[in-house]
Length: 102
Image (cartoon, rainbow, N blue to C red; front, side):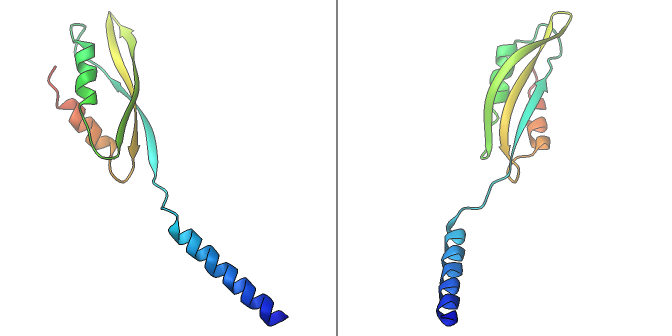
């Protein structure tokens, strides 16, 4: 009986290991809220949002955005994105967004 129970336990452990090996690894993701501020009140904010969303990369997904008042008639673009940590970094996003002139 003990031998049979041991074989049964061993079989269950092998089945569990095989099942676990089939599962894909978890992908670490981060949700980032970016504040993009214009140079002055004459900046076209819809064009600015278009430029920001034009940054595309594997592991980057743009989400909702809104304009928030800063002061003196200036508004900032607040935009959300989800990134896969291994593929996209905040430094990359900052570099790509600050490349735009207007």
